[in-house]
Length: 120
Image (tube, rainbow, N blue to C red; front, side, top):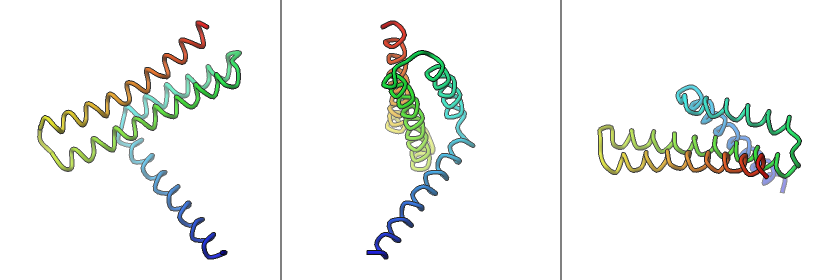
């Protein structure tokens, strides 16, 4: 049992390390990730400063993290597409466009949440 727990702890530690490496790599190379992070800082500050319910705050903060996750997924798609298909190709373009659309829809969800909270 102890060996199993130790192996699981090591696996979780490795997962955290690999995730951090991915975030650092994307942060260094992706201006859009840095831009969305700044938008998230502003959004989180507003969510904490305004008189919102805990549920509203949680929604805004969670959607902000989802935008960053979508941007990381988009970055991963773009890197793999560029590795597999360095030149222009309709399917490569489609894959990249779909990744970008994922970010846009996630950001739109955050915007809708803000609108509903502020108007309602």
